[in-house]
Image (tube, rainbow, N blue to C red; front, side, top):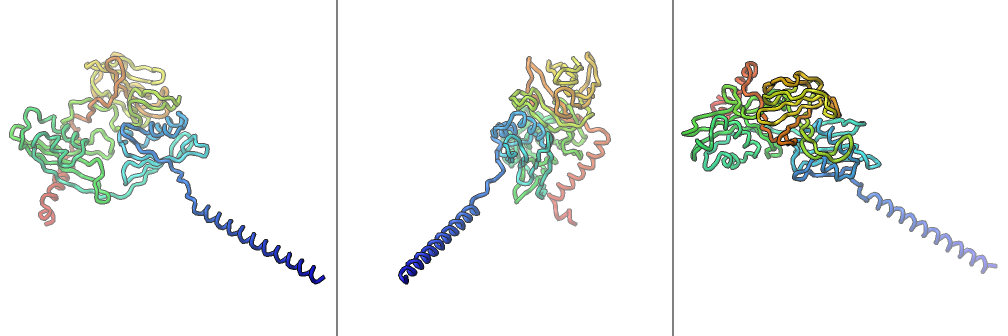
Amino acid sequence: MNMGKQILLTLVLLTLITFSLSSLFHLQGKEDEAKSEALAPIPDPWITQTIPAGGSIFSVLANLDLPGTEIGMVSWRFGDFIDVTTIQPGDTLRVILNETGDKISKMMFVQEPTIRHLFEARGDSLAYTKEALPVQLRTRILDGTLVTTLDAALLALGLSPMDKQNINNGLEGDIDFQRDARKGDSFRVFIEERIFEGKPLPRAKILYVNYEGVRTGFHELFRYAQDDENSVLNGLYNKEGKSNNSSGVGYPLASIHVSSSFGKRLDPFTGRWANHQGVDYRAAYGTPVYAVAAGTVSSARYNGGYGKEVRIKHPSGMMTLYAHLQNFSVRAGQSVKRGQIIGRVGSTGRSTGAHLHFGLHSGGSFINPSQLRMVGAEKLNKKQMQEFELQKEMIRNQMQNKLSPQVAKS
């Protein structure tokens, strides 16, 4: 009997020990599993795309395997806030998709280290906010001497190709460089740069330029600027307020923001790739539209997807087209001058919102309007000249402060 009790007690003890050890190992396994889950990396919801050389918002979004209509519409709305001509290789676009992966919920576009453009999808529209870090403004005077060409001298001083071209465009109205420029000619450039973390950001402002040579004489240019940073009048003028860029055609609008450029894009209506046969400019309803050059109105009518459009034939043989207008201010057969109002911005025809579609037809087909050299006013008007005189004086004072800081302080 005692032997039986001892055996039973032993079995009970063994069962308890086994159960305890099993529970202990089970708990340890749970703890290890929990630790493993805690250490597992959380997936980044952002999909990051970098704009490649020759790329566009359309091309990088096409990599996400989204419906074409979604890419087309989002890209179109994106252009309402970002001038697409400012997009450069290396810019970053980050995207968050919805749960089903067929629509964009959020986007972040970074063009330079100091600015983030944030977008959130709300139905068929995009809500937009902009985050900007503070930057310092720095002015510099760059003096140079011609050795070979002005282009080479400007680039050697660290100016960007775009800044170099702006200076060339400003001077060439007064100077025949091919005929009169000589080795040893001198020039000065006064620029304003934005500085972030000790480094200049792209796109400096050219405030002043002068050029002096034995054959060219002395010439100087000053920057005139309006409050609207997209105004076509912002640029370099001589001291009389005349633009030396008068050899080009005018702009179709007083303020320029390109929302969709010429070339291949996904159509926001069909979702298919198509060639966009012009340039779209963002503008509010009723904004005046100007003839870019003198010519004769060949048609002013409603034309299907283009809505209300005006076509102008120019003496050069080219034809310009202005589409989606709210109304006309001209009629077929009428002669028009450069800068004359021909209609107002609308959204007629196949359009997703108020804008101007500007086309250029030559040699039997539409060509890229960016091939045109567009310039602002040939000369500032009386009111603008008053502003220009004040701005010139300010620029001269700024340069004097840079050249003789001690004199300026006293």
